[in-house]
Length: 68
Image (cartoon, rainbow, N blue to C red; front, side):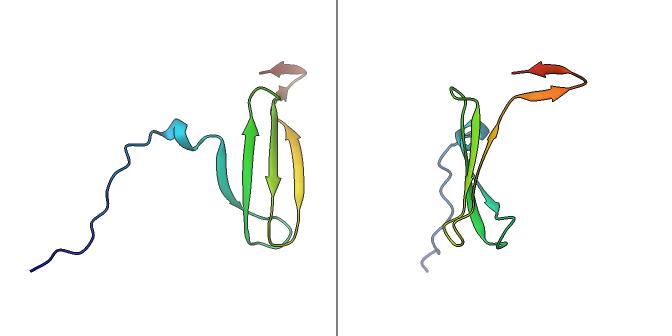
């Protein structure tokens, strides 16, 4: 009896997934990709289905204080 193909752990940690994440496009509700550049402090979302593209700063401002 042959066993079916089993899951093989690639030993990735959570930090491996922090630069590119699959999300839902707010315009067409299909798969989009969000990438972040910590050097530029920018996050980009692009959708290959409808062409939606957005760029945001990654700086957080709360009650007038800015955090990196």
